[in-house]
Length: 502
Image 1: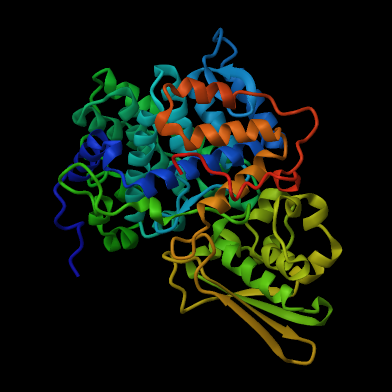
Image 2: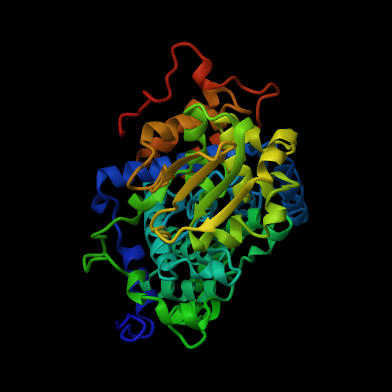
């Protein structure tokens, strides 16, 4: 079959994306897409607030402050911090905070976390330029739509070559979003994408030892996007064919086999001649129900279902989990290491742990990522009995499937399959679910009133006079005493909360 690799004119992708991002108007965006975009922002902010007192957050904050130590009076806000930083350092740290718990949204086909690079870039640029909330919302929607298409071309091939799509594609998406906020022309936006080509980075090596590098990939992409857009604004010439060129993005980051299979037409699919979208990829962005690598979610839900059906774990002889071939490197191998996570990040990328926690406890939340949870003797013993096999019927990457097969001591078997992972566009978390998740996350360290004020402002972003107002609200220190969960406060139901625009 002929692919778009054979017939896409050189430079056409960057030009088409630039035209779309530059020309999109908020009134062209369907109301439900606009509302969903604001809930995706809210979800990312909630993840950042939940991470505020984590060890990684403190160390990255100290490092970012050291980077800007010679700059007097940083101007850009950091979520959950009263201390401000230089614009790019603030974007870096906000990306770390939003992505650090691995609880943020994922575009399914692109296998990419987009909000956590695009939102930090736009928050920094928008605050600096005193942009309106409507301008920021439009740029966010445009950048997510572009980034999702850029990532989808690879058909999950980046992972096979050790690249993290969030870091590498995030640089392009952020360059477009930041450039839109800066008022760049179509031509300048093409140059911004060309600049991102030389800045895009993100290695998967962290998987082998639970290193923290993945956490800064989206913030680094946000920084790169701001830098690339600024270079373009100052007339610095950069490559015009960053995607299809001889040394372009897809040739650099994919092997020969993967490159031969791509369809470059996906990079601009559904973008109309009227500078709008005929198909909105925001609808295909999944909100996570678990703070774990998305690849284990279906298997975790399958395990939780079996536990809630009355499984007696003491009778379990063995467990086999069917997974897509494309996730094996990330969450299954080396199996010995995955059965013995040594950090919360190891646990996040461990299929055996996700299934063991589900089978034993019927839950998989932030508390299950504490050392006492993943080092519990009963968990370790059960993980030794958990293996995996490649699922020949998986529809990955369209769906992140999972099937858990439990063999009991009498030889009988219990099986549950999740063909569509919860949170997927075909099985989405509702906007009410997203708000509930946000309040649970924000309520870990911040007061109910603070969490409510942020929620109100984000959901009414289209009516906000200046992004500075949102920055000021986000740049607050956590309470000295951890806030109570919103769900536990009589009379306050986050599921029912809505602003006039929702």
